Length: 184
Image 1 (cartoon, one colour):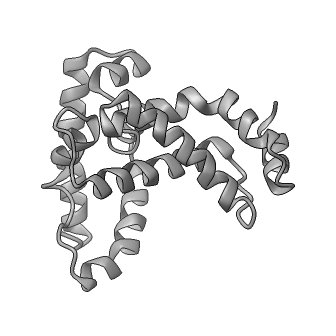
Image 2 (cartoon, rainbow, N blue to C red):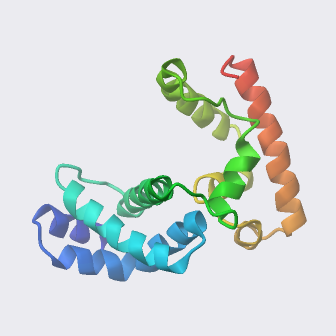
C-alpha cells in the first residue's frame, strides 16, 4: 500500500491505517526505537506507542512523507520513554551518539538557550547543506537515527574506522561552524 493511501486511511480514522502502517513500517520503527533504547521489548512497546501517536495526530496533521513522520514520532516516543524511566541505558546507541556530540552543541536548559534552539536548527541545516552526500548520510544516520558505526559503514560502503574518522572530523567541523556563527 502506498503512503498516500495509508495517510488517507488515518485521515478517515479507518483502523486499517494502523495495520497498514505496522506492516509497511513496523520493522523500521522498531529499528529506530532499538537504537535509542537498546532493548527489544522497549522497541516493541514503542512501535505500539508510535502507531497510537500517529492515530491521534493524523488528523490534524497530514504528513507528506509518512516514513519521516513516523521516524519523528519514534524518536520523540523513545526519548519520552527514556526520560519517564529516568534512565539511558549505557548500551544504547542513543546515549553513545549524544555523548559524541556533547562538546559540539550548546548545553543547558535555561530559557535563553531554549529560545535559541530554532537558530541552532537553522544553522545546523545550513552546515549540513555544505556536506557531501556521504558525509550528510553518515552524520544523520549517527546523530538522528542513532545508527551504530557498523551499520553506517555498510550503508555508505566504507570501513568502520573510516566512518569513525569521518564523524570525528564532522563533529570538529560542526563545532567550528557553530563557533563562527556565534552559537557556541
